[in-house]
Each structure stands twice: as structure tokens, then as C-alpha cells.
Length: 257
Image (cartoon, rainbow, N blue to C red; front, side):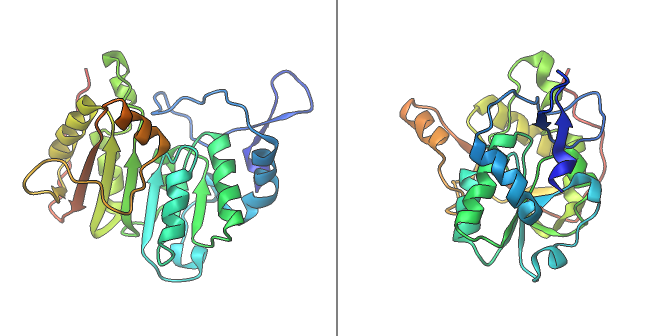
């Protein structure tokens, strides 16, 4: 329910703040930014959340029951304002999509876009992705997991906040189907190199690109406005695609110090 996501304003007024769901933890890979939510986006929570919204605290989902069919499942973590995830759900109606995002304006906008196109193959969490993976996603249920342009946390002292860590990879590995794909993209080369290091250390995945560590952008990943602006400025984009294998062995966590 939408009421699960609203919290009384600390000022004591009658207004409410729409906030993401998460379990208490000392380190998170995101910060909750103060951003304006439009009247239309707020209306989406009030009217469309019962259709598209999923709650962390409702526990484990059954994708077949959720979507009313047996179809390939794509999970995207951090969909931003929702443009690319909306395009993929629209262009691949034979697949089902679940998006996870913590920022309310993007969640509200995506629900509005989905409603306008009458999409039935899309659902959203507004919650911590680590919590959702742990509590809500069944093992061997995801065909493709997407992580596009996550915050690289450039400063070394903030590297521990990066979502790409061996602990994260260990959590997502069992959630993927056999030979499921983990697809990452970043516009910061040092983070791309770091991602490769983490994936090599974590194990359980094979890089699908034999001749190079990086993959060409697949047709299903749309080019975002942010990416187009970067290209005009000469910025690169690195796609990394890994296939799950059965040789997963737990190793020590990656050290960011």
C-alpha cells in the first residue's frame, strides 16, 4: 500500500514525506537526496502504487503469480528517472521487469509512463536493493540483472559505499537462473576496472566477452540522455556482461581500504 511509504514530516505539519523502505544498516550504497516531487508524480503514488508497487516488507514474491504468466524476468537496480527501463519494458513485452529505485520522483515518473502505455510487465520497489535481493527475490528466478551507471563514489574514503562489492555479488549469484546474465555499465573507467576486479575475486561468473573485458552495448540497453551528453563531451561508457556459472565458491570480501 502507498501508506507503507509515507512518513510524517518532522516539522509536525500534516504533510507527509514519501520515503524508500530499508532495513537499518550502518553503510548504504545510496543517499536519500532531497528532490522535488511533482504533483503528477505524487498522484502516481496515490493511484498507481497498488498496481505497480511492491513492498520490501511483504517478503518473498512469486514472479509467476505476480505477473500472471511464466516469462523471462529482468531486474534492474537503480533505474533513476525510469526512461531506459520504461523503454525496455515497452520494447520487450515478452519479458517481465522489476525495477528498484530509492528516489521518489523517478519511481513516480516511471509509474506514470507505464500507466500511459498500459504496460502490464513492469513492477517497482522503492527500497534498498540489498534488502530486496535478500528478502524478496526467489533463488534462480532472474534471467538478467541490470546495474547501469551506479554511483561510483569517487573518493577513496567513500569506496565502501559502492554497491559493487563481493558481498553484493554473493547475494545476487543465487538469484540468477543458471547461465543468467549480470550486466553492468558505467561512464567512469576506474570504476569499470574496479568492477572487473570485484567480479574476478568473487567468482561464480564468466565474462561473456572473450577478446576484451568489456562488451559492446547490447541493442536492448537504450542510450540515455545522460549518456548522449557524455558522448558529446568525449566521455566513454563501459559495459560489462557476465554469465553465471556453477563454480561459485565463497571468498573473502573485497577490501576497499
